[in-house]
Length: 60
Image 1 (tube, rainbow, N blue to C red):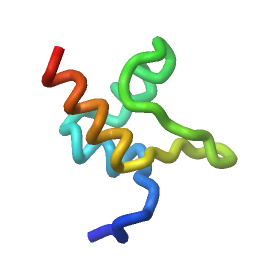
Image 2 (cartoon, rainbow, N blue to C red):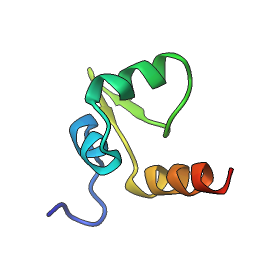
Image 3 (cartoon, rainbow, N blue to C red):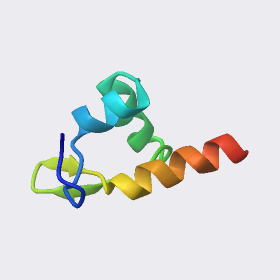
Image 4 (cartoon, rainbow, N blue to C red):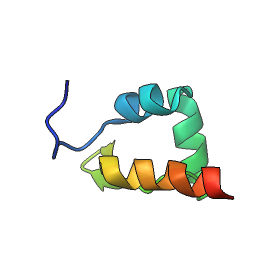
């Protein structure tokens, strides 16, 4: 289990959303999906931002 304040990787978000990792990269390219920050060559996600995005999708 990850620490509460730890950033999520693409793999973590992929597992959480149950979508392929490539889907996250595609969404980012078309400016869709949860926001991510680039840290060097890697994408990192704030867990609460991912959860908020899911809530927004459910409310739409």
